[in-house]
Structure formats: C-alpha cells, structure tokens
Amino acid sequence: MPEWYTLGVVALVIVAVVVVIVRFRVNPVIALALGAAAIGLLTGLGPVDTVSTMTQGFGDVMMEAGILIGWGVLIGAMLNELGAITRLVESLMRVFGRRGIPYALGLSLATYLQTIFVDVLIVIAAPLARRIAPRLGRVGTGIVGVTFAVGLEMGIVMMVPGFAAVALAGLLGVPLGVMMLGGFAVVAPTVVLTIVLMSLFFRLGFWNPERDEQVVVRDDDEAVASVSTGGAAQAVATGHDPLVSTETGSVRTRVGGVPRGPAGSRPVDREEREQPLLLLFAPMLVALLLIAAQAVLSVAGIEVPTMQFLGSPVIALLLAVIATGVIGRAAVGTKRIEKAVVKGFQDGGQIFLLTGIGGSLAAVIAKGDLGAVLQGYFSATSFAPLLLVWAMAAVLHIAVGSVTLSAITAAGIIAPVAATMGLDPLLIALAAGSGALFCIHVTSNTFWLLQTFLDQSVRGTLKTVTVGVSLASVIALGMTLLISLVLL
Image (tube, rainbow, N blue to C red):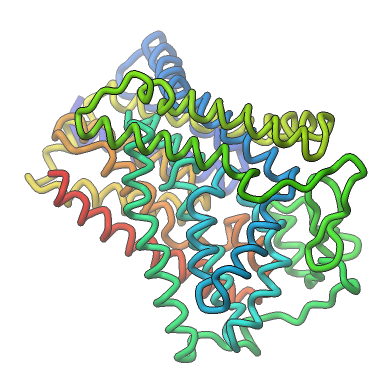
C-alpha cells in the first residue's frame, strides 16, 4: 500500500471514531471495535485476518492487564464500603495542617487511592474538601479544586494502580512494576509543581472568589450541594452524574448507599466495628511495595524466587484483595463486603471492554505497515515520537473528552514505532498519559463533578480543571523527556 493511503486510512478512521462517539453518542467500546475492523479491511488484512488480529489483540492485553484491573476494582469497592477515604482525608488534614494538606491530598489521590473510582472519590471526599478550603485563605476553593483535578487525573493514566495506567502497561508490554516506578517519577514532581504554580497564580489574582465560586445552599448539616438548573442539566446531559436530582436540583453525597451525616460522618451499622485506618490500607500498600521491590530487583538483575512470586502484580494484588476482604468482614460484616464486591464487578465491566478493544485497535494497526511509514518521518532522536504521541493523545482528548480512551488510542497507534526504533515502551506510555491530560473541559464527567461538589462556577472550574490539568500535562511531558535522556 502507498504511504499516503495507509496514513490516510488510519487518520480518517480515527476521525470517524471521534465523530460517532461525540456526535452520535455511540459507546466508545463499540466505536473503537468498528474502527479497528475498518482499518483492517481497508488496509488489506482481509476479513479473516482482521477478525483474528482483533481477537488476539484483545486477548493479549487482557492477559496482561485484565486480572490486575479486576483486583484493583475489588479493593477499591471494599475500601469504599469501609468508609476508609473519609477517614483518610480527615487524618491527612490533622497531620499535615493547612500548608501541607494540598500536597498530601494531591499525592494521595494520584497514587494509592487510585483503586477507587474517580466519581466515587469525588463524592466521598468533597464534603471534607469544602471544610479544608476556608483554611487555605481567600483562594482556598481554587487550590482545593486544582488539588483534586490534578491528583485524580494524573493517577488514572500514569500511576499504578490507576486503571488506565494498567491498561497502557498491558497494551505496550511494560512490566507493571516498571510502570509504577516510572509513573511515580513523573507523577510526584508534577503534582507538587502544578499545585505550587497554580496556588501562586491564584494568589496573584487569577482566582476571583466572587466570579469563580458559586453560592450553595445546603440542607442543615447534611452534605447536600444545590446546583442551578443549568448546571444540573449539563451534568445530566453528560450522562455521568447519577446523584443529580432533576426534580430538586440537588446532589446528595452517599457512600455505599448510606446517606452521610454531619461533617461527612457515616452512621455506624450495628455490626460495624471501626478498624485502625492504617490496617484498612495496609494490604494495598504492602502489595504496591512488593511490586515496586520486585521491579527494583529485576532492574538490578537480582533473582529472588520468593520475591518473584510475591512481587508478581497478579499475586501481590490478589493477596491484597483477600486481606482487605478479611478486614472488611470483621469491620462491617460479610453481607456488606459481598455486596461491595458485586458492585465493583458491575462498575468495572466497561473498563475491561475498553482496555481489550484498545488492544484490538493497536494489534490491527501493528499488523500493517504503519510503523514503517511513521518511522520515515522521525529523526534519530527519541523526542520526535514522544512529542507526536503526546500531541496525538491531546487532540483525541479534546475531541472525545475521555482521558482513558485518548491515551489508549494514541499509544496503540504509535506502538509500532517503539518496536522499530527501539524506543522504551515505558516512555510511550508516559507520553500518551501526559497528552491525554491536556485540556480537560466540558465534555468530561470529572469537570462537572468537580464543579458541582467543590462549589465552583463553570468559570472557576475552567481554571482549576482545564488550565490546572493542562499545566500538569505539559510538566509531565517535560518530566517524561528528562527520563528519556536517562533511559536512552
């Protein structure tokens, strides 16, 4: 096939996928599957090879990432049922105080809290965040908004156990321990620098409380955020905020189906026994430490059979699931933990399919000659393909509004180049994750959740989410390029 034809087919199909998702509201999983099939047929793979390649690509990615995503979903569902997040935020506030809480909370959201779904994290932690904001001064709401936005979004795509980060690692064949270490090397400084810079900008006048915050009427002591009819309609229109009541225009904060009481507290069930906070998070933290330790040993060329087994992500996270379940049963009873597990599987269904279909698309593209075609357009430096994958993910995200979808699609398209040029797949994953964070705006469900629950106006949310996370995206790209100098 001529070069122009191959590039043209892939470009047109990706544009078509974006259009059917945005304009016709087709589910991203179906749209990506159709796109993968179209690329295969139009580039000469033929019907049989197209289907087999899609199937193999789906299976290969799920073999790498499927079980890990499942374990993460289960851990997150159980921690949510145990009320661990609320207690954690309260503890961070006590320990780190007014000056340190944005950084402690931002790093927590971006790292070990990534087993919890983003929407759930926002709903659970928002009442406490609203209590923190006044302590940070006149621009406190803006600082809290940036902290949430940057921490949550960075963790999703760049930090294990974030499900998009796990999916990228599986798609590109990056060992999960390596992805975790590399992601942390980018995420930690990026989160801190972004909060520092945005806080400075806000204090210099970029944040105007009168215009960037909204007046909220709450039902006595209960965590209830009233939103304007327009804001509620916009949130409902995105299809992502089931807690919005179109009749009352209010949003009620719930955890595990139980209304939250004063100051984010939770009614205690008769069979519930409060466990030490460190104990609740211990299984997950130990699992992450085991994975990181094995990654370090692997890089150092040291083989320890026991660590190779326990530090395997599948085993480490499985042990964390079992231990969290045991602790949970002792704390809230077997029925509630079983219910949380069922809910976790329900919530994780689309993540499994999206991850697998991303692998199908990447496999179909890799089967053709796109890698050889793109290689001809790159110089010998590794910066060009990294900048390209960042820009590709950024454009896809602006169009589609999905951080996960844009990162996976961009990584799948550029993956053949990594193989032909000897570029470390970790760098591709980090660049794709960085680009997918650029310009989060009104098509994102996270945008509307943060606007509603953190008492921001749309104008204010554009500053904290769109500008703040875009700044993080650029900083993360810079960190990725620095890492590339070390690895290459």
